[in-house]
Amino acid sequence: MNTFKPAPSCTDTNEYGSLRADDALNQILERVEPVSGTEQIPLQRAGGRVLAQSIRSDFNVPAHTNSAVDGYALRGRDLDSAGPGTEFRIIGTALAGEPFPGTVGPSECVRIMTGAVLAQGADTVLMQEHVEIGGGVIRTQATHRSGDNVRLAGEDIRQGETILDPGRLCTPADIGLIASLGRGEVRVKRPVRVGLLSTGTEIRSIGTPLEEGTLYDSNRHTLQAALQKLPVEINDYGIVADDRTILDQTFANAERDNDITISTGGVSVGDADHTRACIEARGQVVFSKVAIKPGRPLTFASLSSGFFFGLPGNPVAVMVTYYQFVLPALKKLAGIEPMPKGLTLRAQTLNRFRKKPGRTEYQRAILSREENGSWSVASTGRQGSGILRSMSLANAFVILAHDESTVEPGADVTVQPFETLL
Image 1 (tube, one colour):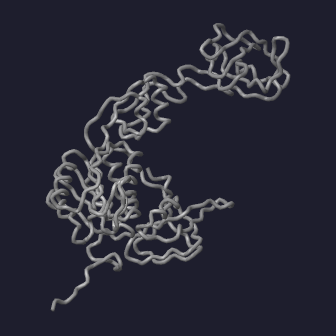
Image 2 (cartoon, helix red, strand yellow; image 1 turned 135 degrees about the vertical axis):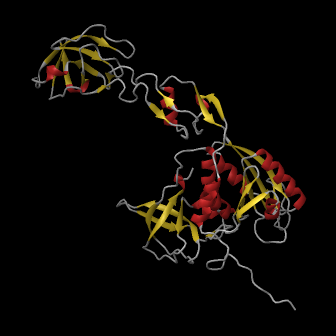
């Protein structure tokens, strides 16, 4: 009679063969390199893309010294001895796009609108709310300073200055900045090609009737939504049954066409879990277990062409492993520099967070700002890796480090807001 010998599992403390979370992430980032290839695209399509060129200015921005307010332009030195009631004669008007053609002399001023070029001789603008007007003159109401309310030529951008570097993930402000230089096109890195599939004979597509023991595929839809925030092109291979031959062919196609392939399910130790065997035949499995909860059976492999992530099948584990391990790899593949990291902060717990030492845990929580400005955090409740609602209710991860144990109410913990994740 054979002797039963239990295999290591996620219930073990310090499970043999499991990498610490930090070590797993380091091994990923050591191997991943940015994709090559660039393309020239219209500026209106460059938001969320990664620059492949430096952006330099051919001229000053603003191009001319101009008024920051609606008011009256005059010589600042005439204010040195001027107190309330000092008069300046209005000799003309300057509009945005229509400069005053003359020169401002002593005790003279020009009516000027916001953005209009300062007339020759003027270097100061008094706000119209700060003067009295009548009889073709203005009278000062208070003490003013030379240089007030003036935007100097080049104070935003100097001619020849580099304002954006390669590797920049273009924000809306960046697009506006490039547009202010008169550029209609920009060179960017090509998108990362991502292959996506769900494995499991029990998985069904939306719209298909459910039979006993089957469930709808939520993982692929979750990942597609998350990937939309990145400069990627998604190749969707759909749902693949637990069939070694079909999986082999699907992974061959995905490796050929993508920089990175992400599958969900089939990475544990069940009889129908063929993913690891298929991947081992195509490259090097770097690791297949990480000391985290949820998401322990996370597989990462370096293939002859590209990389592979095998995520667990449980939906919360999919989201945790995506945000903590796949997302940093995608950022590096995309060539984003410097590599952005999710912001963390410290918050006080409002309830107990149960935890075993020997693994890093990512518990779903609701982060709140108290009236005194401090941060507090509360659990969303049950933390099972199949309870996707715990992610929907949450707005943050409470990250409990490898060696930490149960945290009692009132303790400070590390929190990672979802809003800081790309």
